[in-house]
Length: 73
Image 1 (tube, rainbow, N blue to C red):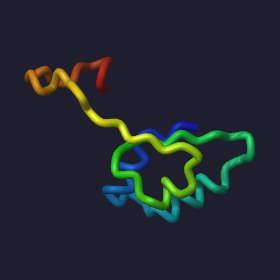
Image 2: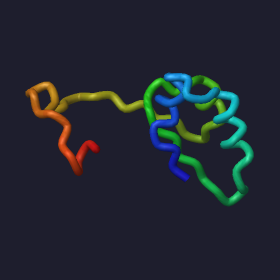
Image 3: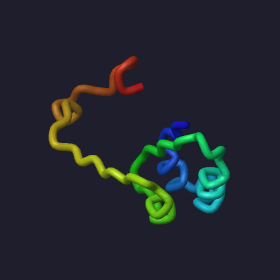
Image 4: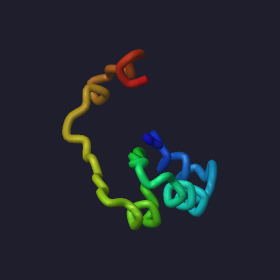
């Protein structure tokens, strides 16, 4: 299951970290969870098997190219 941008939803307090942790911990045994988004709260990192932080090196946005339909959204 992919919880796309869950961390951003938590950052903006759309629901609580406790609710997210409970939902993740109560999943079926054979279900793997992928959580995306910046600002991962420590509680999410603590229950993760793998945590990765991506860092921008180069992005075309800095040249004025806006997000494109079908690519970024």
